[in-house]
Image (cartoon, rainbow, N blue to C red; front, side):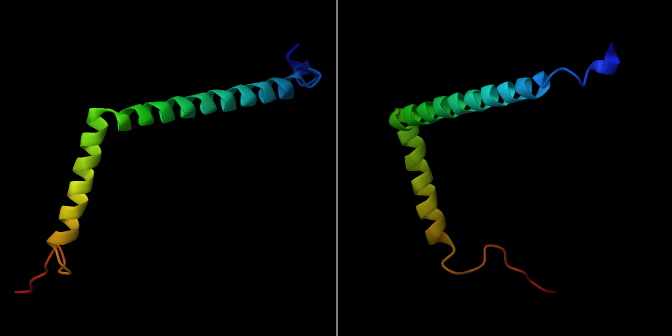
Length: 76
């Protein structure tokens, strides 16, 4: 019977298409849930604190080196 597995009437391609569509739907739902979690985090106190910390770090790193290289090479 294994010889006739290729004569399944195209059901294999149909099943693959259904699996592909289901997979795409699951990915879309996961992306939507991740977006909601991100929005909730940004609205929370922890999210605001994290954003403030990142902004503070960015300002500090922008002002520290003033055009000088971070690592200095010295010969000798």
